[in-house]
Length: 302
Image 1 (cartoon, rainbow, N blue to C red):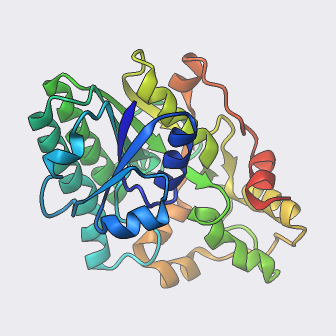
Image 2 (cartoon, rainbow, N blue to C red):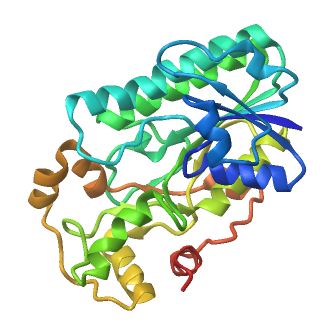
């Protein structure tokens, strides 16, 4: 099978490419810099230039492609300036719109697997959130909803669409975990804000496995929560991380300090999203890392 991946050099896309190739598939990529993409992800057979906000991908990139996995998007981490927020929105909403326009012209791929985010739900306290829960009303909720709408437009072209609302992705070498490690290594790790907010996470290997299943299983259609079955309150998450690192985890970071440092992004760290992978479990998906401690030990080599 030939699979076209956007965001191919990213934290998830690079691992997905490696796994697809090891399973005997051929991977083509879309990237702003295709030469650099082939250097960073040597498993790629072909790479094509694409600026998601500027235009649709070149039609040549879809030649004999069976499936498209759409992972491209501006990172949400970091201080949310006005320009940063615009890039977060445009890269997802306009980028997905441009991708689907190209799919309309190709008539080739039969499935689109598109990333979304559990930010769709907004801050929901202790409520358990399954795929049929309505969207929230904050910045990321609005963007995630529009993002999914653009992806689902591919349905009108006869394409099976699978949308994965991804949680906090854990693995070695990047992602959210990399930014969490420094305060713990310095001995000042601990809860953020009250520590009572729910964090819904997933190991990268499980997320890649979900993408592989979505590509090959024609029964998978619609929205799926890409999170492990055991979300944790943030204070407990910090305790487990401290245990794995053999470092203290009791110094809280006050909410006001996070807001001063990160602006609007702090709201995401303090928001509570107790997300459950109901549809994946109903489909019989087996998580390799259902428990946080096991996931962290693998990710950190502990």
